[in-house]
Length: 217
Image (tube, rainbow, N blue to C red; front, side, top):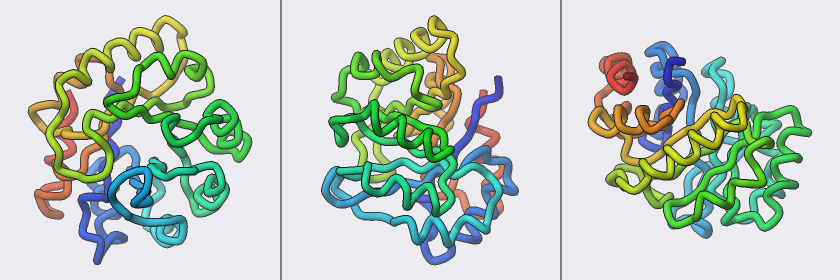
């Protein structure tokens, strides 16, 4: 299966997000990754559902919306209505994660779970069959441009094996420090989707296609 590439607009030019999204769409991206941060759960503040709604007309690609907010449950409907196709939440921010995933699916959206580097992978055990996507954070969430945490590879392998054993169609996505050097190792470990911010957007509009192509094995 071809690895999915989900460029993170966190690294895009916020003064022209619509243009940036159209550009990576045309360059061969598979999803658009939208990082939502609240300055509380993570030490950064980004965007809310109104921005997602404003961006929706600029691409037909799935919006891969990652909620790094606490609590997340009160905002699920707003992001769903704004045009998110896949909504990913954190068990670290939500004590009732099973119910939250059910709620996302009941809204007709795909549900994802993200785990931080310090969170044991065992937290996923009761959740696999509710997850359309599992996102392994290979940096501590909050800011782009961080270096890949090598210990993430073992975590990716463990989760990939579990998905294969269960026979689910869960996407295994990795976010953090993804570039031409780390992407091959992450894919060999079992990742089926890569979030890339700096590795895509730093190259400029004319180089997005080449940057995306370089990330795929």
